[in-house]
Length: 104
Image 1 (cartoon, rainbow, N blue to C red):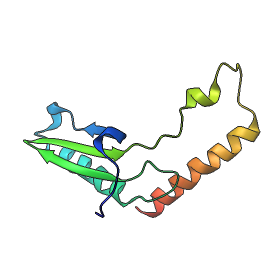
Image 2 (image 1 turned 45 degrees about the vertical axis):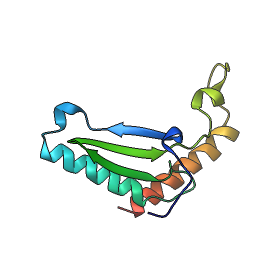
Image 3 (image 1 turned 135 degrees about the horizontal axis):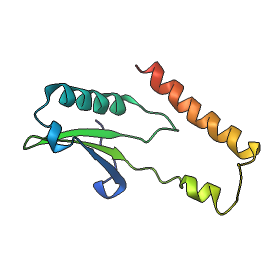
């Protein structure tokens, strides 16, 4: 992985629950998720990731990208969002999903 400027302070952390630490199938699935995440490089995905293992614990560190929350978008407005907001938003989501599926 190339050098980068993101730090743990700007990352999200996913970990394999301790009760699954001895389960080889769950470890393999978690490692596979980390490897697949690390391959994704798309404007609408979460960014870079690193898989770590320390003293039998498994971690996936994912670059956090500040883009606002769904709550920010919804605000205090009752009812559904207008299509002028929903359609572009969903196009971004679908673009990221399409890219992820192309990567396997």
